[in-house]
Amino acid sequence: MKYKKGYGKELEKIFLRTAKNRKLLAKFLTNLLTPTEYRDLAVRWQIVKQLKKGVTQRKISKSLGVSVATVTRGSRELLDKSGGFNKLLPLKKQGGKTLRHKKSAARRRLFLFV
Image (cartoon, rainbow, N blue to C red; front, side, top):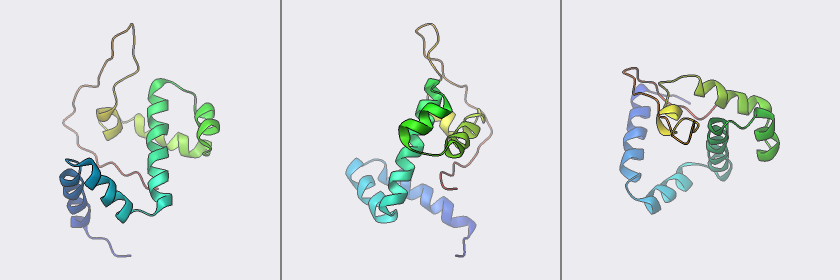
C-alpha cells in the first residue's frame, strides 16, 4: 500500500465535513471501515474514556474483552497532555469540579490504528 502525506489531510477534511451530519458520518464510517475496524475503534474510545475515569487497566481489559497491551496503548496516549484524547475528554472530576487541560500550541495527529 502506498501512502502519500496528503491522504491524511484529505481524510481529516472529510471527517470534518461529515461530522456536521450524524447520519452521513455513520454511513461514511460504515462504508470506509470493515465491521471489525468500526467495532475496534468504538472499543478503543471506550478504553480511553474508562482510563480517564480512573478505571484500572486490568478491569478495563476484563470488561471489554481486550488485551492489557491494548489498554496500555490507550494509557500511553493519555500521557500526552497536548494529544487529541486529552483535548476531547475532561479530566477526572476532583471535588465536584471537572477540570480541563489547557490548550497547547503543540499539534499532534491522532492515529487510532496500530
